[in-house]
Image (cartoon, rainbow, N blue to C red; front, side, top):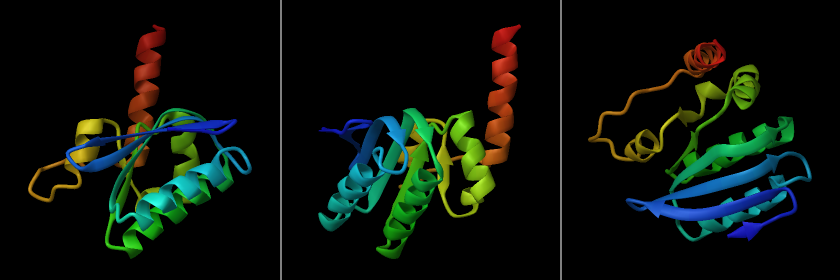
Length: 144
């Protein structure tokens, strides 16, 4: 586990896929450097299957979104894959604006994220726009 002033990174594994549970903020000077260094160390150690769990991330700015895109590109360049898990509405809007959904993979559930690394398993593909809309409907349902 790495504890940074604004970002905690907890590492675990599921079926050989590394999952990083992130707690805090991914913003310029606030966890972006720690996350980049942590993930690049994993890559250097030969990890090619990474899930970033954003369920406990409270804020992502454009620098943070850019970092996620950069890390995804690094994994792809080495023949691997990075998947974002549990992107909430606030973050989903950032990714939608940045058009990241065209180049990044998003999953709302951990089992789908892990299964996405195994080509023989059928996993639903999530369109980030549909995901945002479904979350908005859920919020309305909970408020009524």
